Length: 267
Image 1 (cartoon, rainbow, N blue to C red):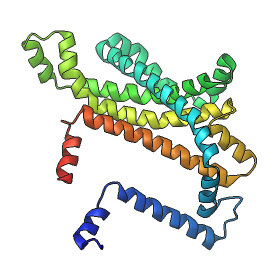
Image 2 (tube, one colour; image 1 turned 90 degrees about the horizontal axis):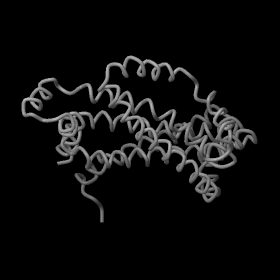
Image 3 (cartoon, rainbow, N blue to C red; image 1 turned 135 degrees about the vertical axis):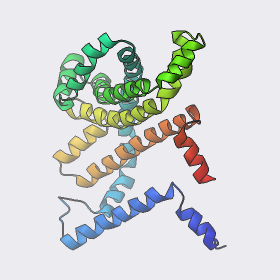
C-alpha cells in the first residue's frame, strides 16, 4: 500500500532520516570522485570494497571494538568523575582558580600522542594506557563546560536563595547544579567523542588489540578497505555513545529550552 503524499513529506522531514540521506549522498560523491578522477585503490578504496570488507571482517572488527569501547567508556567516566568536582573547586575558590585553571589550559598544548608512550613505560601494555589517554582527552572539555555552567548562574537567583535562608548545599543542589546541567552535558558530549580518539591513540602506541591496533596494522600492510571499515566502526561507537548521553540529557533536564523546542517542533 502506497503512502500518501503527506506521509512521505513527514518521513523525509524525520530527524533520523536526514543524516542518513546526507551520508548516502557523501558515499555517492565518494564513488563518483574515484571513478571520474581515476583514483587508484591503493590510495582511496571504493565504497563497494569497504562495504565488502566490513561484511567479511565484521566478527573480527566487532571483537576488536570491545576493548576500544571499554577503554573509551572508562576514560570518559574518569573524565566526568574528576572533571565536574574540579570545576566545582575552581568556581568555589578563587585561589584554586588562579593556581589550577591556567595550568589546565596550558596542559592542552601538550600533544597527547607524545604522552601516551610514557603510559606504556609506566603501566605496561594493557588497558591502563588506553584508559588514561582517553581520560586526558576527555577531561578538559568537562572542566571548561562545567566551570562556565556554574559561573553562569544569575546573581539575583543566588541572592534570592540566600534571602530564603538556604545553606550552601541547598543553593548548590537547587540553584547552581540545575542551572549548570545543560553546559555540563554539552561538555560530556564533547568529552565522549574525544575519549574515542584518546583510546585509539593509546592503542596506536602500545596495544595488540583494539581498533587502533587494526588501523595501525592495516596502514602498515596497505589494507585500506580494512582501515576504512575500522574507521566506520569507530564512528558508530562515537555516535552511539553520544546518543546515549543525549537520551540521558533529555531525561535529566526535560525543562531546558532545547528540549522544549524539540517537543514543540515534533508536536
